[in-house]
Image 1 (cartoon, rainbow, N blue to C red):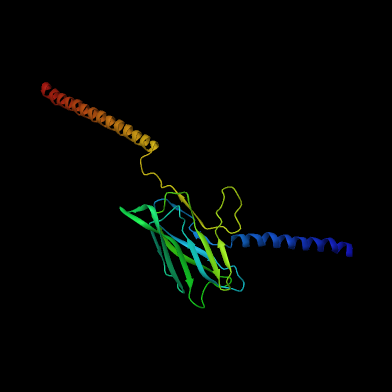
Image 2 (spheres, rainbow, N blue to C red):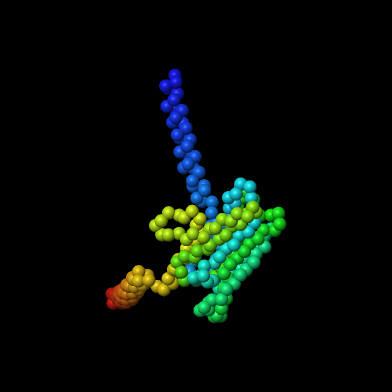
Length: 238
């Protein structure tokens, strides 16, 4: 009996260890600050939320600092009130100026600092979103927001590592917003070809209509002649 139970016990322990390792790693890797949605269009405006999960078992998140990228300044940045939190907006000089609706702006928001009211914050097992409106979005492929997350016990999580294309996600990744080019509004070649086909079809239909009208008029004329002939024939007999 001992020989039969030992392999089963070893297998069960091995499976438990593997499951703990495999299932545990994704949870740790995914619990970082993100920006949602993670994709937008260059030149447009959007509402974005910085989602901040609390990773501590004993402390609350009491401050979140969002640094906007220096290489991609945004002309308009506004925040939405979050109950239990205050926000401080820090600006910096930009050169060359940013053009927004015909105006030249020499300053841009460089940092947003969200601070919890005394006794508040993001408690263990919870997360908080901080909505921000931004635009017009710059003509770049990505915007990297480096974030500092401060806990009530003094610990600081630094979400500042920039991702490398083709490489694994870093241990402390910064939130990344991917920007795509706007769709072209000019007529494309296939659309023009389709219009040509429509023109050809319209011309053919017009030609057929004219031919039909001519044939109809000819039929009426022949009918009129035949009717006149029948009217004359009885008169000739009498």
